[in-house]
Length: 341
Image (cartoon, rainbow, N blue to C red; front, top):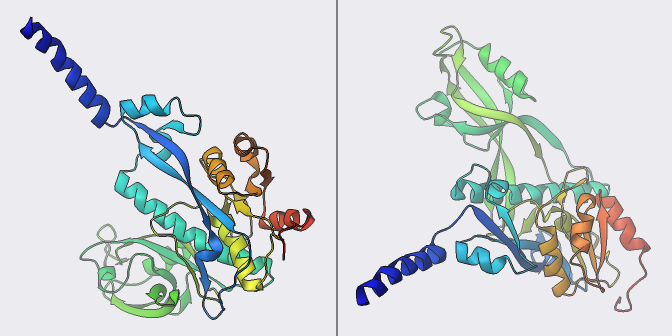
């Protein structure tokens, strides 16, 4: 009898261990945090403004589940279970996390440009090529860096990938070329772009002996030369979905006044430099997070209105929007809250 018991117990122990420790190709999306953007945004040269009720950004929790967690989460209506392929695609965890942080950095720039454009403040633009990678041992490795925006070669503008390729290809191997670059540098006042001039002796293209060789991979790039220095402290939070909330917070900071008129407002959505609002993920879970934090109004991308309303509750109004200007217009039309100063 003892051996029969062990014969049954061992598979059970192994099954329990598998259910507790083995991840499957499914992610659980759960409600995250509601964060007041006015507490994390700073504009260099401006006194920090206390603008009244919170203006929330929100995120989601993202967890790769085990079979046991899948079973538990399956009965939790606030959690969505989605295939890993729809979250990370073919990326590794490290690549996905880095991509999310990069998207967050882009969201901050996009929000600043959108806010400034909305306020009628001109933002100079520089077009060029963004360096994606630098091949080891090539001429480029002696001075060009990943992330550089190359906007001229030997004084000739290269505003597109096509013009950059043609300009470099037209040079002779062994000649010296001068690259005009915008390079981001971090300081205590935030990130700013420095103009850098890099001179390099070109190599020989291994496939075309009569053409010059540099050794970079690149894509079309653009740099917005912000007239202000902005810091938005988001820590390890990634992704582009806080762009709309950042833009609203920056408008408040730059104007020195609340645009929510005493209401506790939350927003999610990507933001383009022109103020266009784009789709994001996990909107139902984000609605739960901001609802529980006390938001009275929640702005979401238009296509995700029904998902947000499914979890909004009776006290939170949800609006689907397409542009930053539309958000501000809706706020101006809503009745002023009795909490408004």
